[in-house]
Length: 294
Image (cartoon, rainbow, N blue to C red):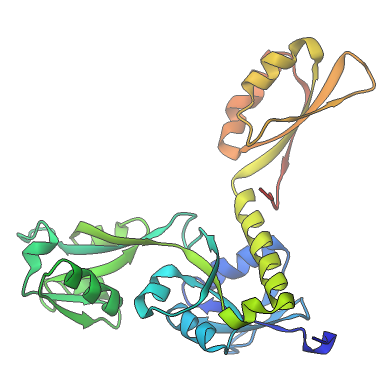
């Protein structure tokens, strides 16, 4: 493949995941410039061509080869049962770093307590095919209707129950719904067209993107910590550190002193630094992390 032909067609999810995805790419080292009504955002990498595509449709375009790779939830891959290469899981969403859940929810004051109670009832959802397969696997006869949006407001007037995606459950509670079953957990996936992934150059490019996106996610909520300690205090100092891995210990010019470098959760710093000071550590420096390659 010539340099002129080295171009990876990459799908960026349009909609609720768009801003979070662009922010993740920025932390990973790529600037994506989405402007106005254009579905072809710019990117500061001449080897990548981006296209904004709805997450619900991403796997179809990747499977058919219109895109070499793309980011979408595994829920939408499972919904349509597309044949794509799973490259990596990326646990991030529009609100948090947690997986989302597709849940079966009913009105708070309804008599329904389990899926079997909904036999013969109407279920509204955007995840139609997966929901049909779920109830069929349990031999529960239901009518599954596609919901174009505002799914939470449909029970009990327009549907008896819903299958809806949630991160925190707050929207369901606000609409006086309660969860009776979790159908699946979902997270963002980097997927690839199987033929494209067999191409050495494209596979290498996709794997590099995977590496850097995961490194950016791994760095979130973590910080680096540098400090000095006397060798005599080293055991106590190391005992204080809740390290991602064992801390790096380096000899200083003074034979009695060493330098330590480690990574820890940002929320732990306020507890750890006073403890380090108490056991003799000095020169303690906290610094931000942009990427952590595990």
